[in-house]
Amino acid sequence: MSLPTTTDVVLVDTIQLTANIGPDCWGRLREQPISITVHLHLKPSFLDISGQSDNVVDSIHYGDLTKAISALSVSYADVRSLVHEVTQKAFALAGENVDAVRVVIGLPKQILLANDFEVEVITPRGKDSLQQAARVLVKDLVMPVLIGVNPPERLAKQKVITNIIFYEQSGMHQVDYPAIIKRISEARTLFLPSLTEERRY
Image (tube, rainbow, N blue to C red; front, side, top):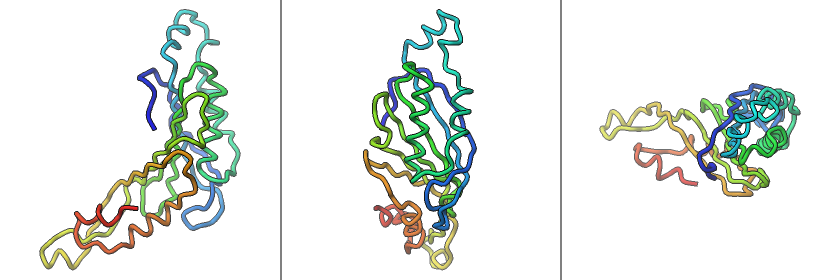
C-alpha cells in the first residue's frame, strides 16, 4: 500500500458518526462510535485547471463529500464494507480530478485496552477498495509487563503503552483483531525485550 506521487490533497478530517460494522468490544452487534477521515489525492494538473478557469465548477466541493459521508447507512457487514462505500462516494463526487482515495476509519471503542483502533486503505482510481491492502493500527495499547531484571522489579508488573501496526495483504478480510490483542495481553512475558519476540502472529 503506497501513496501516489506527491500531489495536492483535499482532506476531510474526522467526521464523527455511529454505525454497526460488526461485533463491538463486547462481541455484540450494535452501533458504535466511528470517525472517518478522507484524503483525496488530486491529479497533478488539477490546480492548474481550476486556477486558470477560476470557476467553482472546476473545484472539489468538500462540503458535499462531508454531507454524503455523514448520511451513510448505519449498518455494514464489517469495517472494510464501510471503507468501500466511503471510497466509492469520494470518487463519485470528485470525478476525474482524483488519482487515489485514502480512507481512515477510527473505532475508539473497538479495543478496550487501547486508545484507538484504525483501519487505513488507499485505493487508486479504477481499483476495488475491497481488494486493496490495509494498514491496521492499535493505538496506545496498555499492557502490564515485567520490565526489570532485578528481583524486586520481577515481582510487580508495570504499565507499558505501545502501538501495534498490522499490514493486511490484498484481499485479506475478517481478521479478529480483538481476539489477537486479547491473546497478546494475556501472554506471559518476563522481560521487555521478549515482548516483541513472543508476540509475532
